[in-house]
Image (cartoon, rainbow, N blue to C red; front, top):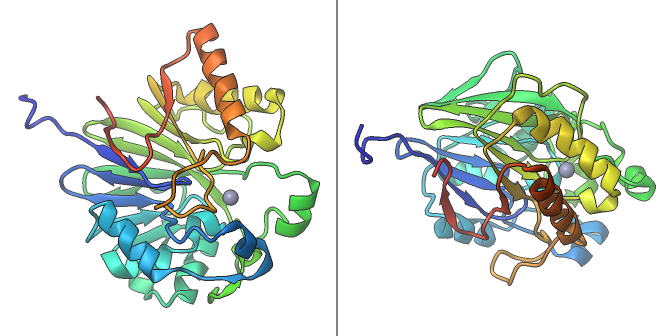
Amino acid sequence: MSDIEKPQVKASFRGTNCLVLKDGKSTILVDPYFTRVDAKTVFLKKIQPNPKRIEKALNDAQVDQADAILITHAHFDHALDLAHVAKATGAVVYGCESVANVCRGGGLPESQICVVDPKKPVEIGDFSVRFIPGIHLAFPFILRLLLRPGRKITAPLRPPARSSAWAEGQVHALHFTHPAGTFFNQGSANWVEGSLKGCEADVAFLGVGGLDLHKADYWDKWYAETAGYVNPKQIYWTHWDDFCLSLDEKWRYLRQVDTVLAHLTHKLKKEGGPPEEKMPWLEWIDVFA
Ligand SMILES: [Zn+2]
C-alpha cells in the first residue's frame, strides 16, 4: 500500500478534553467545549454557550461539517456547547441519557441524539467506537458538596443555568477501532478496578484534569488502572489547560497539573513506559505517526 492510500487519522486538541478527529472521510468531535466561561462567572452566575466563540473555534479547527459528537460525561466543560456545535455541523451527538437531556434543552431534534449502549459499538464511517462505563475523578469534600457526584440530568437542561446543573451523568471512556489503528480516550481520571481489561490500544489520549487535587499514590494507581490495561505505544495527555481562559488567550496549565505531568514523565522514563507528551495546543497530529 502506498503512503497515499494508507489509512490515516489526524487529531487536533482544542482545549479541555476536546479532540477533533478526521480520517478524510469522517469528522468526529469529542467533548467540544469552546465557550470557556471565565473563572468568576463559572461558579457565581448562570452560564450559557457563546455562539461567537463556538463559531470561531469551529472555523479555526476547519470544521464546517461533522458526523458525530462523542461526549464522555455531561459536566459543562465537556457538554455545554454540544447542541450549538451539533446544529452548526449537522453531527449526531452520542452519550449517556444526561447528555441527551443537554441536547434536548439546547433544542436539538431527536434525530441528532443517540443514547449509547456500552454493549453496542457506534459505527461512524470507518470508525467503530465503544463507550466504556467508568467513574469521574474523585473530588475533594468542598467540590463534592457543590457537584454531588453521580448525579444525572433527568430533564431537558435549558441554558442559561448554574454550571452545577450540568451534572456528570454516566461517565464513559472511548475505545476507537479504525483501519489505521486503535486509540483510547478517557476524559476524567478515575478507575473501576479491572474494567479496562481487553481495552488495548495503539495510542491513548488521557485526561489529567483534576489529578492535581490528589497525591502521587492516586496518580500511580490511576495510571496502572488505565494505561496499564490500554498498554499504548504512545500517550497524549489532554485536559491539562485552564479552561476558564478563552481559546484566543495564551494557554495556562489547569492549577498545578504541570506537577502531575512532571511526575508521570519521570515515572514513565524510570519504568521504561511509552513515550508521552501533552497534546500540542490547537495543532494537528497524525495519530499513528
Ligand atoms: Zn467532569
